[in-house]
Image (cartoon, helix red, strand yellow):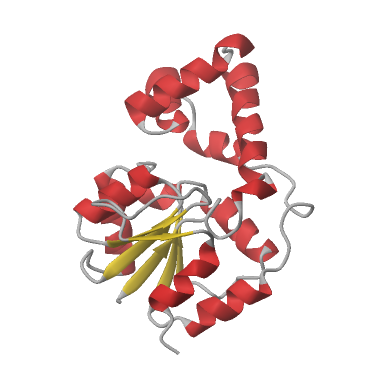
Length: 210
């Protein structure tokens, strides 16, 4: 396996911890306070932007001329210390897995590094690829994957994506990557998913060679 690409939020830690919920609240605040969207319309607008543009940010930059960096800084300005703690067992597992390992996230690079510091996973990954590095083109767009592969100096064949979102995995699979779905919901592997694990520790039986 040449490169393992790991999603960040709700993948390296459990979604039940509430990190993404805090980010979602900040996104809603940004739309209401900085863009002027009525609070009652925010959820519907976010759903529409997800359907039409892939992320809320792409919709905002296309339709409201929002500055992407300003948005990313605002929505990721959340407290983490009460939600995340050092993931010593995960660090040991990552150290046992061979090959190069990258974080590949639709979040900002700064947010990814904050999360990794809080989890005490600094140095566990060879590269952190944030949304800025993708030219603000997010997963599941094929262009985002091609950019990440180029930055890692990797080919899709022989690489893998570990992610909690099926649309991201489906794109990765079409490009030739091996795919691992991290989900607490039961579900079989299919033409988009090679492996299903209940949490990040389930990857040990797939990739651990030591």
